Image (spheres, rainbow, N blue to C red):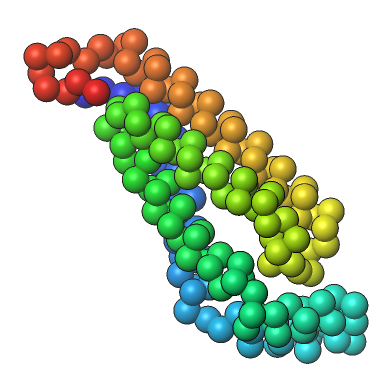
Length: 169
């Protein structure tokens, strides 16, 4: 079945983004976050002592804070759900779009509920930067969700699916 050109571009961009996210998450799962934070703190000790102290405190909190322990696995789960949803949308399955909405927006709800831990998880960025980055990511996800919706709708208008062909949604 032919697809709207926008759907092709979104699919490619989504796959690139997912590959980058999977690489980053995989790397984070393999390294010891406590050691990494202590190394960064040591590097920043002379330049920015307050941030270095925050990083040291955060490193020692990794042993007891459940949010820090499960967050990389939650990220991986939602990246994989996002991959599944993109594949389903490529196959023109409407449920792929709903799954995409869940995979992209549920982590923000999770972050709001655990805001204190969320901001600690990104220690060193500063609260303003965490809020700015989060809002930018939300805006980007809203844009992609809207573009996917449009591309799927236009593809179905341009190339209607017949019930007899077995391609029904």
